[in-house]
Image (cartoon, rainbow, N blue to C red; front, side):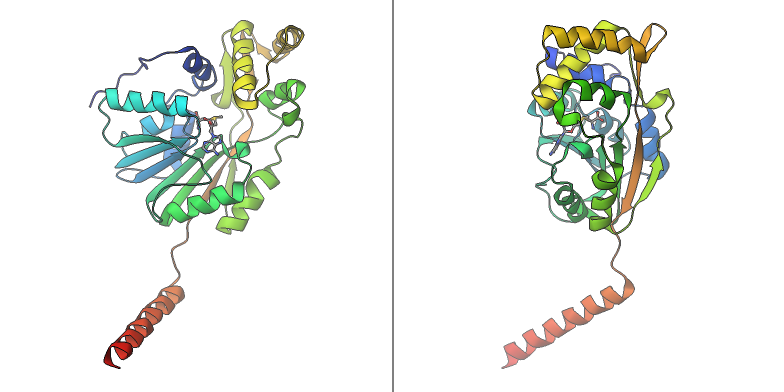
Length: 282
Ligand SMILES: C[S@@+](CC[C@H](N)C(=O)[O-])C[C@H]1O[C@@H](n2cnc3c(N)ncnc32)[C@H](O)[C@@H]1O
């Protein structure tokens, strides 16, 4: 199986998307965080909101099978072409919504949702879907973006929808408690491994222009672009523009049925069988 280190396909759209994803190389900080919490060797993995597939591709090296889904067809096309042209047979990508998973129940051992839960309108439905498709004992790992990181502060200047900070309680904690009952939360280190680092102001302006247009349908005018150009150096680190990201890793396990539930299920099964037998006899 050939796994080139650099991607081979390019377009303006993908180039722009990469401005936001290159900073976490596929073998980067998130992958290390995932493997430190869950051994995915020979497991079946689902990556929800997989973007250009960077984490799904990395996870497919050890997993039995990996499926990446995203609403964005262009990213799914790119990721699918990459997997096919590189002969990665245990990796598939599908255009699909997190709130309507087209998979059988109990299909995956590990589900990851990296940096996407804050984009969901109906988080409880998406998490209920995750719980359904996880096998008993299966693991959910969420990389949750929190409010008040540099990205949010800048976005709030230009996009009214971002006026509200992301509130970890309503965005992650309440829906996770509602659907999974319990969760573990480990704040991510705020060092540069979870930061966006752009080579210069021009590239950062380009990245924000793309993000606002693509993610929020907002086109910046010349005045706003100049405003952004003046704002960015205040976040600078030497010749680079560094934008700190704040977030946490959330972990949930789909509980296996308790012994008592298993006994009840078993008795239920037997009763059904007796009823069926009586009906057949009678
Ligand atoms: C910030 S990007 C993160 C991409 C990728 N997880 C990564 O870490 O590189 C969020 C992604 O979630 C996707 N997304 C947003 N809402 C979605 C939904 N309802 N169902 C599936 N994907 C969704 C977006 O299209 C986008 O690719």
